[in-house]
Image (cartoon, helix red, strand yellow):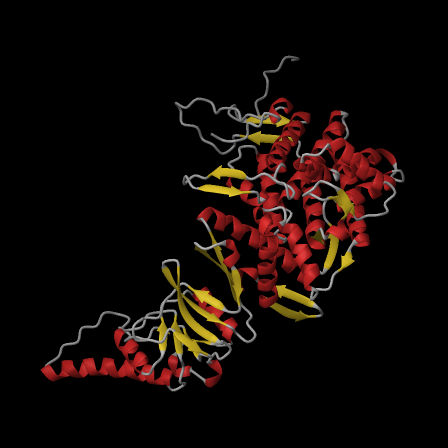
Length: 558
């Protein structure tokens, strides 16, 4: 009875890896992802050029944008990419740091896995380290005055300094701060909520120079008035009515056939249609508007009545744009002309004007009194440049939004990470038992960020890191870090290199939690879903990079 036939539980086509092999593979995959975007950290960062499926080009160094475009086979690497997405959606900045940090956390864990440490032990140590790290952040954070423009500029600038538009530093930072302070809504208790998506519109118009970009105190739409010849294209202090209904004769819902006995009845029908439109227009004109904007159509006759009364009209506007205009000039969007009231008329705008930019006409509603929505007008040489600028602006606005939400500062330039690292190293001596070593390793892992900064500046990494560790060793002068431009070791306060608290905290949390999650995986079963065609050959094994060929970067998919 000793020799049984082997019991097959899993199908043949399934591939199952378990144990240490999986940990190795996951760590390797995570490191490969981290290595792809490692060079995009810091002000001296490199750009990546990606060809997407449609043959278009994306040139960027926004961690999230890069990872979004890459196709990845390995499941662990996929979850790394999710990280940078979460980071982007939550706080909008620090997408690169999160991946680099998570990669490093896994890298230092590898040594322990090889020594047969149990992953849970490592995870426990990591979570402990995370709690202590957040505590350190709380300790060294500086409150910032949201109304102090200089401080805000410094903050936003350091987050954009690492981007392509770093060379136009103040410009983008200014745009971002203007836009977010305009669209901010006070929730009370000193909290401010800024809805970037809804109320800040970024209009990209190719042509001109980047320096011509500006934040409009109001809204700009890609539309012209309906009849350019007749209607006024420049109105000072316009009264604006926003409609959500068509100003044309309503056809019946279902098809109706009317049989007419007399010739004159046809005339009567037409006159009724005209009368209907005339009434609609009269209801609108009762309020003496200067500008009527509707999301639906305007019939020729309605246009005639409106232009006769000297009212400019714009039709078929996007709903989102209409909402923005309502926010900007204080109008209320009305669904039926019968229900118009004086209070629905927007009078907050200072100027309505149609201008030609490039080869299109744009309508501007600007100089609003207290706008709660705005448009950022971006100009630039080419589409690619504009797309990158828009991505940077998104990041900048997120940073500005985070500060408005949680006005605390941390030093940039790797200083925060070094301080955390130094404090954790000191604390590690008091950690009991086996967890001590992984805890210490986590402390070391935080140094990945300043180290990468130094690498990207092309410095002597070892010398710089030793100097910095020496400065931070006993946890004082927490503000010393690397100035990413010149590569000097300086006090971050003087250089105005700041990071926002919410970004840093989120980065640490996301990175460590992700590292723990990947470490806890000990079994990968692949090939569950795919039903293979009878003639097809077995699927190719996914290639996992070994340490050896990380250096000669073979990561660009052909």
